[in-house]
Length: 305
Image: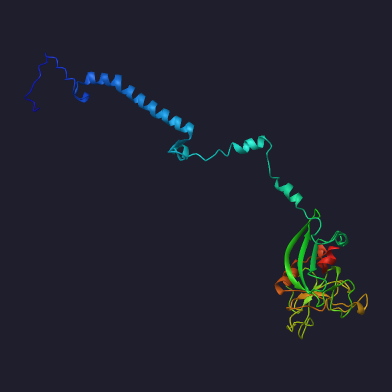
């Protein structure tokens, strides 16, 4: 009202009708009733919500119709399972199923090169840490694959890359003769390198010489020029420590000689083993006289015997 209505100080305010909102009732009695009723209502609501939340967390899921469900917001923040518990239980129960890395490497140690017979492996000197294996596809085949194996301090062998290569036109022989067009089967040391091109980074003695020249055409009518740009002498019937060009034949000329690793010209050789230029360069850079490199060469069947 506007202030014209006055209430006598001697008169007690009239009680509000029972149907009016509590906020319009005198402050004292309204406050008293709030102190008695509202906290009780809040406790009831908290108890109800808290109980529902606890039940939801305990159950983990709320079902939504038959065969369907969804996780509550509280449960969805947790992982699907408790990974920190399962490994501990497995460890306590001794349920390890995978061996440590050291154990696996012990099992995988290669003490004999696959495909090489025990008699051949026994011929490899203990000081030889690099072994080039040229394994032919057949006794009469001119195709083979070359792999450089490295032996570790523990005696195990580790394979390098495998490269395609060629050998003699008629294949392999255990009794090589000059002009038989077969490559000799055997185990030979590798001590000397050379070529028409400059040393690509050889650890072996390297003879850069213009006399490393090949001309003409091969068995497939392929040009032979450049075949001797890089070579490594195979110590079959030759003197170690000499240039690959040296023609001294300790076992006589009839046994043949000049058996080299050289650049592949796209076809069979007269007795040598040939690799592509990139592989020859890599090989020359890798062979190390301190590791006493050797080559074991022959058809696969002969090497497996």
